[in-house]
Image 1 (cartoon, helix red, strand yellow):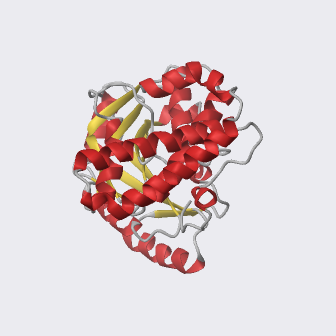
Image 2: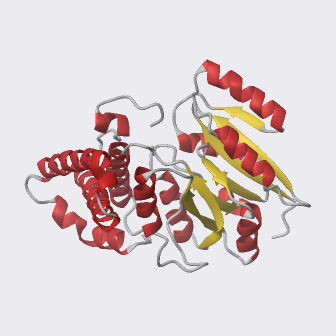
Image 3: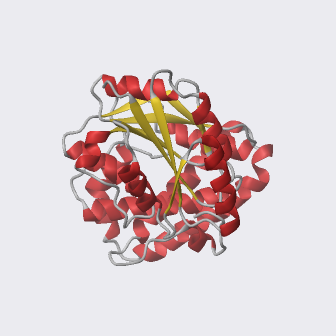
Length: 322
C-alpha cells in the first residue's frame, strides 16, 4: 500500500505490562517506515499516569488521555490523532512477535482492508494453557486470508476504513467484532494473517475467564439484536443468529441464564483448583463446557435496555481492569 508512516494504538488502564508491549513494538520497527506509537491512558490512577508519562517521554511515544471509561472511545481518539496510512492495534498486556508489522503490511498490500492476526500466549501454567486452547479454537480451521471476526488485541486497518466507520463507543465488549462485521457489510475485505502474531498475558483465574465469556455472550446477543443480518463468522454464532430467537422465547429463559452462569463459575473454580491433576483431554473438555455455558448464559441474559454487564458485576468483586 506504499505507506511510509504506520500508527499503532494501545489503550491502557493501570497496567504496567505496557512497558513490555512498547519494548516489543520498538524491537519490531520496520526499516524505512516510520512507526508512530500512540498510547491512550483510559482513566488510570494518578500514580500510574505519572509513571506512564515518563515511559512515553523516554520512548518517543505519543500519549493521549481519555479519562472517561470506555476502551472503544479511547481507540477512536487514537485513530483521530494517528497519521499513518495503516493503523495497527494491540493491547497493553500483549507483546508483538518478530515481523508483526511486516506481516500486517503484506496483507494490506494484497488488498485486504482489515487484517486479523493470531493471538498466542505468554508463558504460564495450566490455567493460561487452558485459556489459550479456547482462543486458538477459532483459528484452527482458518487459512491465511480467510475472513474472520476482528479483535483489536491484534488488528491492522487501512486508514480509508476509518473515513467511513468508527468503533461503537456505546459498547464495553464486542465493539471490535461489530466494527469488523460492519466493515465487511460495507464492502471492505477482512483477512486472517497467522504470521502477524502477538503473545498475550492471560488471566490467572478461570472464574474471571468465565465471567468475561458471559459478558461476550451478552454483547454478541446485543449486537445480533441491534444489527440483524451482519455476516457472522463461526458456525456456532451463525446458528445462534438464525435460531437463537426461538430459544430466547422459551419460558424461564432468565432463570436458565442464571443457572448456567452459576454452573460455569463453579466449574471454573473447581477446574482451577484441580486442573493440574486432570489429564489434558479431560481438563480441555471441561474448559470447553465452561466456555460454552458462560457464553450461552450471556446470550440468554440479554434484554434490550438493560445495562451492559461487567466481569466485576458477574463475579461480585471488583477487578482491577474490567
